[in-house]
Length: 261
Image 1 (tube, rainbow, N blue to C red):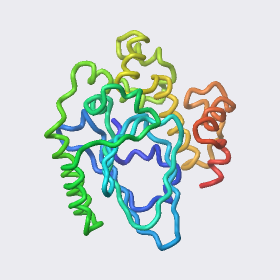
Image 2: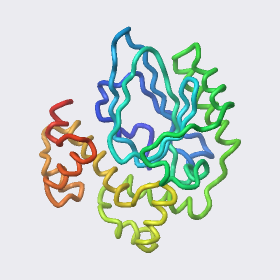
Image 3: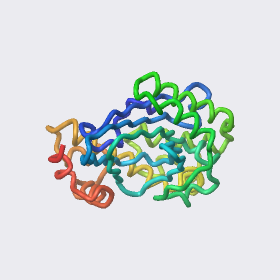
Image 4: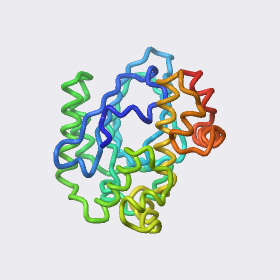
């Protein structure tokens, strides 16, 4: 099972501001993976660009003055940080996102306002005057209490959608939709429906995103391994196919990414 220490998704860890993940408490694990909390305080005139290859999922995010629901992204994304700030986000599991939006497909590559004034007040109160571990813990606890009061346990479709996403996330041998269908005991069309209705992207897009995240980690942490070997281990036909996917989603080649660490 993926855990908060999962390093995938963060493209340039050394450039991060203070960044913490807090696991979902018992009772919420089937609805969200973890809370993530970046905090920053930059000198006047300085900008820090944070680049990520997001998980194939939606996030419910609290920032000063606003709560938003962010859908699954089809590309790498970035945010330029300035001044002082923070955010508290919940990485939603497939069974969780459908409780906040009935059509995750419509959230793809978008961020929409989310009406939750009580959530905003409680999280802001926790972080308004303190940026330490205790404040982060209280912010995550306030978020969790809010979610526990409003979210319900997944139905059968939600549990199956969670199983689909967990299988893809944790088994790097999964490179085709047919493998997912066989392991879950459903049809390929059934897997496609689950991905569309509970994630908002195709199952192949989920597979490719996790494999690209893994490729980025390998490129970053294992400089001795060749790009061709990484491609083979992650189920790509050859080096060129991995490079094509990398350029399409990240806008640069694996070699360029490795050299930019």
